[in-house]
Amino acid sequence: MHVGATSLIAALVEGGMTVATAESLTGGALCSALVSVPGASAVVRGGVVAYAAEVKSTVLGVPAELVAQVGTIDARVARAMAEGVRARLGADVGLATTGNAGPVATEGKPVGRVHVAVATRNGTRDWRLDLAGDRDTIRQETVASCLSHAVATLTSEPDGRRKNFGPSDVEQE
Image (cartoon, rainbow, N blue to C red; front, top):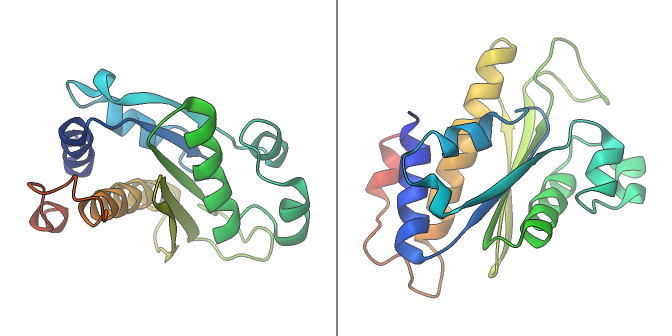
């Protein structure tokens, strides 16, 4: 079981919140990490694996014009994916992953270029990652990073709902 997934599920349960995932390069690994945690069914709404660009647009609502302009490996696309899955699956938190796990450069983006995003009712944040390693390593590190950023985001939400869930939980990852 993934430590970050356990921490995120705990934070969601504590806050009475739900989560949904929108994944490209991780291919469902993020949602799988979440549902491996006992009790996840109380907070996980579901996930969308949007590997193809048109699925990002038609299912998640990522503007096709944005994809045509910047490609799929972009912070704005990750943000739109997180917001889209949050809205479409009726979750309090939307998580998204998009990027290039290799083996070659794609859309002019190097192997290891990844964007993750976390959308909540208080807004959306994104992070660019430049990861090293083989395809599996990049995918695993993307999942770990997305979970870590989600926990950190929830612990810093201004509504005070995360009072008893501190930053030390994030550092364990």
